[in-house]
Image (cartoon, rainbow, N blue to C red; front, side):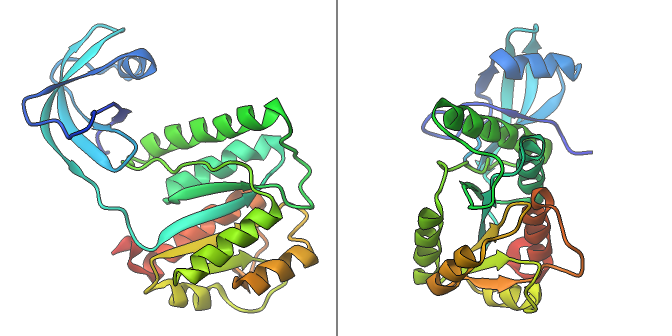
Length: 252
């Protein structure tokens, strides 16, 4: 089993070997919950690709001091994966974010699709987005990741169309995961093998609306079928990201 991972702030520069980095608040409590103490080694990450191997020198429950053994920047895999996730029903939203993050997604974009049952309106939108971001943080730690995928502001269909156009215009790839399509996922994975980024658009439980599908197609996205079975929306983004791994440089 890999070493536990905790979030820490490193400031403007990576800490040098021998330097002390302190944890407080929830992270210090997590150290106590995991029954870690002086002498134990753990990883500290800042959520933005930087990671340090440290040895705990003090742990008193509310404060944890760590001595840096080594530190560096963890290179992110390519292509960069963004999942545009139509809002799932509330009981599945956190599951979708958790699974995507553990699968390695690099960015998450909530999407208010036409057939979404869930709605983010008013003050609820900010709270819902923060819940997604919190889930991504905890899932990234669980997956031993140095990069925490950011959760974007809620996107309309028009916003997603613009995102697809931008990515395709930069030489990237965009795909709509759609159960009624016949074009296999392997085709879009092959196209992404030499691309710098790929966007997966995942519809709601009711599926992507025909008009939305045509808008995405016109913007440069390719509708593909992920596999022989129909996946719930909470699983599709994670499944696509995982399937992409051995077909591109992401797992190399």
